[in-house]
Amino acid sequence: MNKRPSAAAHDDAALLGAGAPAAARFDTLKPAAAGAAVDMNLDVILDVPVQLSLEVGRARIPIRNLLQLNQGSVIELERAAGEPLDVYVNGTLIAQGEVVVVNERFGVRLTDVISPAERIKRLK
Image (cartoon, rainbow, N blue to C red; front, side, top):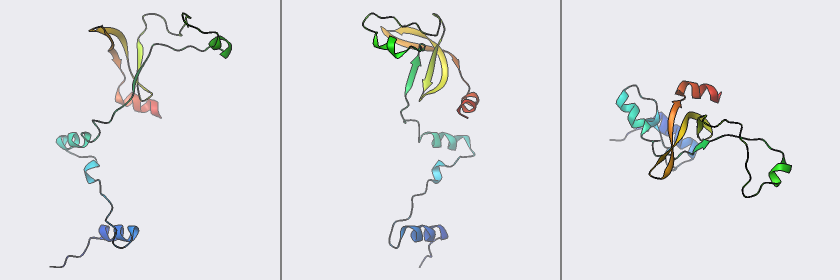
């Protein structure tokens, strides 16, 4: 039986040239209607690494003062002692927390997590 190629396959061949393989389709990445299918789509990105950073505070100083810094110098930050740290993921503020020590290592206990809706608002 001789099957005719679909219109999409024909369009791919025209774009890529004769004998070229058809373009890859990513139908599995489309939003799904069912909850189980959404979990399967999320699995695609769950292992993507992101940069997590904590900010204790910031300071603005003139270059003159920067050049005078040496071992033992103290830089006063714009944040008061006891205020929460800012937690950033890829440069986007996602939470605030406090420093804790776990098995002789520093950690952070999240005290306030910014909602996904608020994070999206801040991106705009």
